[in-house]
Image (tube, rainbow over all chains, first blue to last red):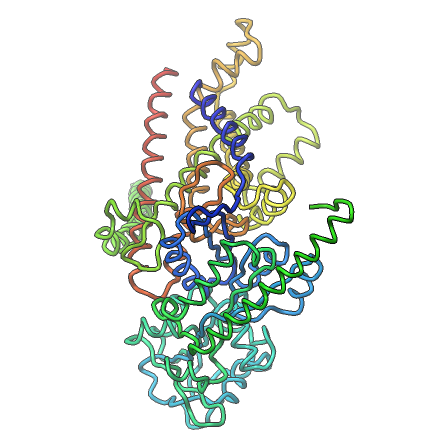
Length: 334
Length: 284
């Protein structure tokens, strides 16, 4: 019984002592301290994780943590000021912009890499050579539910067999992006498909079913080339298969998407966060390739860097003006 | 004669049915274990246990994940066990039968079946935001304590109920008070069943992912938590994260982490069995 008291005592002591701790930034010989909270998309996570890990080698005292609440979940926290950076696999939505405005959060959007969405079929499928965007729309739009059930309903020469659809879960940015690009409205699709948040489950599903069709991030195809067949998509300029080259030069449209990080303005003036974002943009090209994504063209990184620097400059200027204004006024809130 | 033979056949048939059922479960478990051990056991080494998470599958380790799980386990045990057992003692031994007691009973039983993510949402609003604990170990273990409290209460009540009335009346007959009876007779007699319930509940807490992700437990944490107010990650989140990555190397890591988590639960159960045997010896 005595032991339990010790544990209690230890816990409460720790509690009290940790309250006094404060994350201050003191630069001792270029070594920064502090912490950076990141949350958001699980698609962007591998890139951010890689950057955070490499950053640790340069600035070991900055505590960078990364969560995987999803793009939407990440923005919820971001708009409350609970995180410094939000990972996103789609641009911020109007609703989320409004939430940020209500809480006086200003931010900058930076793209860090591309992800191609691949359309896949089973290797035994010998009839599909490519899809047109129109065909994909006909197959995935909400009106198709319960109606477009067989392959020959998409193209008459295809077999009179049931089509089995696989796709990412409706909460994912991947699903949002696909529906936006193909159906024309984010989040609008038929509901009668097998959905999974885990893309490896989709790989399993498609590789085990001759009449399956599905879509997910290109990286999952790259790792499972022997189990899946990649299908090109025709957007009016002939069928194009996703690859490093076609995604990077934008010819694989409309199914290649940029991945973003969003930076909160209060973080943009903190030395450790500024250094981290600079490091991110400088290394995203190499690290995104390493984790299976496609880097932006190098001049695009330069553009993002310029955008970031302008944002930092504007925020710092705004802060100085605010400071002088506050000095004359009485103290208001925090 | 005929009837007797028929009954014997029925008896045998049921026996084999029962054996089949038992082995069916064990067989499935065996297949899972074999698959996981086959994939992951060669990946387990000292580095795997002491390395930080990494985007390179071969370099990645589970140091922050297993220490986080240990923290969560310890804190949840500290909060949930005393509360749960005390609540059960009150409800079973002191509470009077009334409409209110009935209402409580129905609610507690219902709470045991509420999906864990709902507790996560509750924890997010109350502990993370209202109490301002953030995505800390404390918020996580409070949330998991809520999650397993109903389980502990229900299990403890069942254990208390199983203590025969004669034991209690004998104690009263000797002039013992209610508390003396509970402390000296009822609790020791039911201790082994209570511990079983507690361990089952804690094992559930250790395996939870969803509520912790909701309250803000992270995936990449490059430091070991030092205080209950630190941010954290746990083994199931790390496993989930690795399983959903495209690269095969992460699948192997996930298998290895699953083995470690299984071993952790196994050791916990072992300790519980040991305590139970000791408790039984004492009460006899």
